[in-house]
Each structure stands twice: as structure tokens, then as C-alpha cells.
Amino acid sequence: MEFLNNHKTLFWSALILFLFLTLQIAILPAFTMQQIYKPLPDAKPLTKDELAGKAVYVENGCIACHTQQVREVEMDKVFGSRPSIPADYAGNHRTDVWRNTANLLGSERTGPDLTTIGERQPSSDWQLLHLYQPRAVVKESIMPSYSFLFEEKDYLDKGDIEVKVPAEFLKHKFKKIVPTKKALQLVAYLLSLKQTKLPEGVKPQEFLYKKEVKKTAGAAGTDALPDGGELYTANCASCHQASGEGLEGAFPPLKGSPIVAGDDIAVYVNIIMTGYTGRPGYGPMPAVGKNANFTPEMVTAIMNHERSSWGNNAKPVTLDQVKAVMEQMK
Image (cartoon, rainbow, N blue to C red; front, side, top):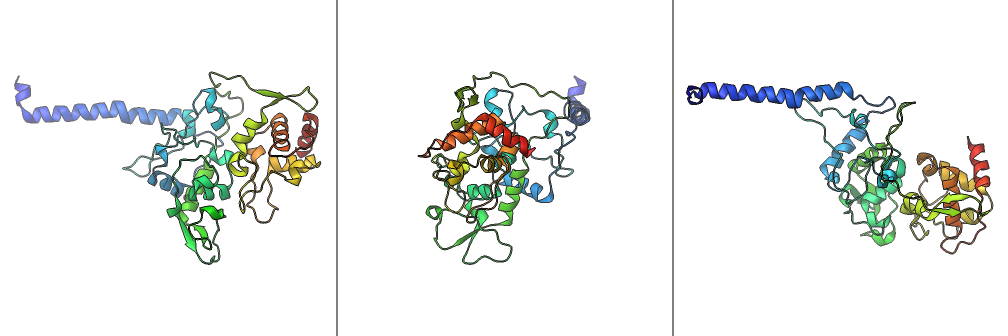
């Protein structure tokens, strides 16, 4: 037992064993993984502002409630077009020699997954309002307000961006709400969160435990369409609200809208697919349909839901009408 009694020998033996195990278990596997998993060809590195926004995301503990990983189960399909793969995270690099980058995959979904929030909700106006007061855009939200990332001003300075906050959520009715640099950086990071397309010819992993898709009859009684109400809730309600009344000064109402109830199907389809910036008093609408890869069936279902809800009583559109417009848009 001389070995155990020799403290120097024991110390150096333990140190060498520790370093050997560290090399084998942590360092070499990490280098191997870096060689195996490369960033996807179309992946874009974060800009300076987006990186700063990522730091704000970490600083404010957003990972405590949000994940950034689309699991391979069907219920996660609302968060991404395919399950996440290791290559999605291969672009993450060490912050510096001593610190690794933050792992933001998360494990708790008190709030929704954010893997594709930049595609699902690409409106900076919505993101800023949601940060200032989440219940202004999602009535049932339990997310805390991040109003400390904003300033209240009597007058706007040159270059200021005003957040259009409904009067009921303002602490001081006549103040202007202006995002700080940190708020703008955080929004820049959130808008950068998009799922990179796989290289051509690479088949994505299929979602498991698929549920039966609920369909409704088309206008002619022959077209099988997705459920327009579900599509509206998933893609439109966060801005236009479940009531269809929108938010004054931020998002226009669909209830009683002449565009929704009108006969100009081409304008209606174009707004859904490519967005709209020409309405005074409201923020620009992003290209929701294009970003979410809406099919003609999905657009038709959403339009018919909006045209028959909240007191709207317009004639249903047909799948053929929508297909014709979308063909012209190509």
C-alpha cells in the first residue's frame, strides 16, 4: 500500500487520470462532433446586433420558459416544418477562449418554442409590443412585461421608433413608448430565429404520432380544406385577435373589413401571402403566407373563416379562385 501512502504519487496519478478522462470524455468528442456536424449550407451567421440580442435573451432568462428545438412529434409541427437536427446548432461558437456559447435548446415550454419565431411572427411592431406588454397582443399570456427595456418620452427624438401601445396598457396616457437599444437588439435576435432549409435531396425526418387532420368542405362542396379556424388561430390571431377586432393603432380589424368582405380576391390573397404596408395608422403586415409556406388550400380555408366570422357574412371563395391568383403571383 506504499502507493496510497505517497501523497505526491497519489496526487499526480489522480491529476493525470483526471486530464486523461477529460480529454477522452469532453475534449476529443467535442472536436469530433465539430468535424461531423457542419452548419447547413444556407445557414446565416448572426449579425452584431443579433449576437447582442442573444446576450439580452440569456440575460433576461428567456430560456426558462422557451425552447429552441423542434421535436420529432407531430404536435411540434406548429413550431417548424421539420424536426431539429444537430446541424441546426453547428454554427454556435465559443464566446471566447474561456466561455462556451449559451445552450438555448431549453427544456421548459411555459411559453411556445421559438425555433422559427422569425418566420411565424416576423413583424418587429408585434415583437416590440409583445415585449412591452404581452397581454396587449395575447390576452391569455402569462409572460411578464419587459417594460424596463423601453423608455417613456414626451416627444420623439429623431430616429426614435414609437411602439403603438393600446391606451388601456399605458401607465401615462400621453407618453410615447420608445424601445431601448437592448429591446431592439433582442427583437433583432428573435427575428433571426428561422429554420434553415435542408440541402436539395436531403429528406427531413418525419414527425411521429401524426394526428388526423380536421377538414371542412369547400365552397362548392367538393374541395376538402384544412380547418380555417385552426389556421387563423395559429397564424393570424396574435395580431388580429381571436375576436377579429385587431388592436387600435397597431393591427387592423378584420371584423367588418371591406377587404375581407369584398369581391377583390386577388388583393385579399396578395395581402395574406406578401403582406401590406400601405394602411395609415397601423404597422406593416409581414408576408405571413410566404413565410409559413401557405398552400392554396390553407389560404382558401383562412379566407372563408374570416369571411364568415365575427358578423362577416361574405360569399365563400373557391379553391380554384385562390389557385388562379397564386399562379399569377409566381
